[in-house]
Length: 398
Image (cartoon, rainbow, N blue to C red; front, top):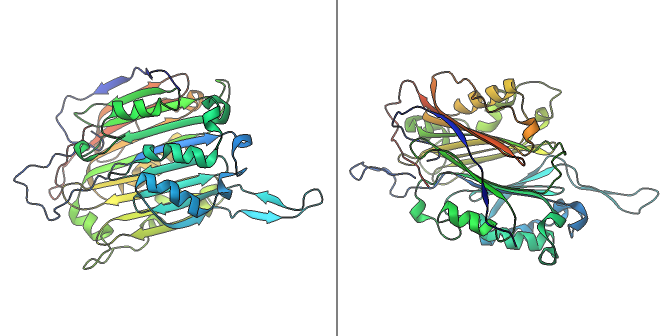
């Protein structure tokens, strides 16, 4: 349905240092003793779709039952574990209509591999490991807009985006995620989008695909700020984020504890009224969702040596000061040797400019940005000034 993608040129400032990355594939030395035999792919694949409300079969995506979402997620190879709402769906009566529906807010589903967020007209599917969110794209379209095959995407869709860091072990991925070219080609079967690759394999890579069908003059507050930490201090990460047999978490509610460091303590902020859902996995690992207003914040941690990874993302628009606080708060979730920050805005006019935030104890090694007519994105890579002795390096590509 769509022509070949248009690639967006990126500008970059880079240090020539050889370093590992939260976003470049993980290669662990063959003679490195591993406490855990299996490496887990921490970096997430994130698919986001926003529909025009008049074409949504259920009138609102939040009116679609959990069972229907579960059927879609079978194609992505993950399961729903729990759910939390920023505002419950309400049915009430008034003088004009017997049943009026309030569907404002967002539902956050905690998954076996990461998260699903559903609002009135948009859905964000964020999955890790060897999951296949793009294989769930067609079932998702069938669920939201059953008539999509008879229409052009600009008729029923406002925008579609797909983003991911570099894979740790790209050879373990399955179709349609075996390479960036394969992912872009798959997306182009459904949309007419632009693809960009930020960063470099020597440091960290961020892959971005955007199909934006909204008028260029529209001002929309669609944002994402993501912080990814790798080469964690595994003596700390295993103590804080291993919750299975034989492990006692240092803190049973890490997101709640870190909330003010991430989002501040302003009581009038929408973030002050967040609903949280936190889970430790057996034998190790941690995930959490927070939903507030129409926004979310989510954390996912793979703490074990050889593939240690921690990510924090928020969809809440942030000022430069709030962005710096969020990044520093994320860095405080666990000591790490490497850190990458990705900033995304669907509206280039609202983009902060791509200047990398200052981060204590870290040196900026590379900063890349892509600004197109339909989106803007920046990717910043940092290296700790004094490396952590207990971290096991991981190199990421793909």
